Image (cartoon, rainbow, N blue to C red; front, side):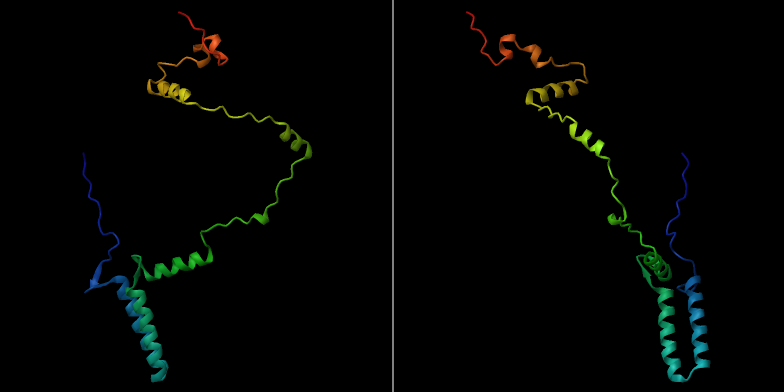
Length: 160
């Protein structure tokens, strides 16, 4: 039988620069570029606030994983769930109950309901015999086994 190599650790990213993967490196590169733009555009106080926020957001997107999913994938899935939830709720008031003509209602009332036959222990033993033997042995009907005198719950005649 042929043996196949099964890939392992398929969720591991290739490291290019020390412990950083390509994705992490690119995110940190863009974050550094944005911080440089903030440095050139704003005064030091605004630059410090914007730089810290940009660094925090960039670090989160680069390094944080939630349920072994990258943070940006987690955010996209959360947005998708909020826009279109998977839980479908049936609103009963939106549907009208179909009207049944009065003639059909009368026919339903006229149907005869038969009571269920009670299953006795002797009937259960007959059924278990049939199931156990695969249908090879079938127990005789209880009415055929009884004498006509016993069929009406009468005592059998005493014979000596």
